[in-house]
Image (cartoon, rainbow, N blue to C red):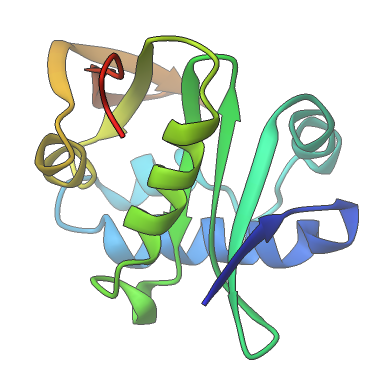
Length: 153
């Protein structure tokens, strides 16, 4: 597996991974309407393109296939998604670790879904607070989390 930077040509595959990850890996914690609001079938390409230009985007690639991706904006881990058929193979850990090392601050933050919370807790993140966020008329619960990076390698 190779971790590399993402470019505009990767966007269609990133959106596919995002949609599949949300709709297949998060079904136990969120309703179908919440999943549709979080990851709609018709994504906002312009917004994703803006994020791709503004944030550090990394992807995990193996044999020419993208398996997952993650994004960091300043000290905020904005996105971390892996293909559902490749979960629990160290892909999310590799991507998360690569972005933690690139974080310019001594603390990193994430808004973790109910599904992702245990993953981040296992990596040393702590819950700051649960929160309710609205997406396309649906209210979803996630968790503001943080991790101290001082002395961390």
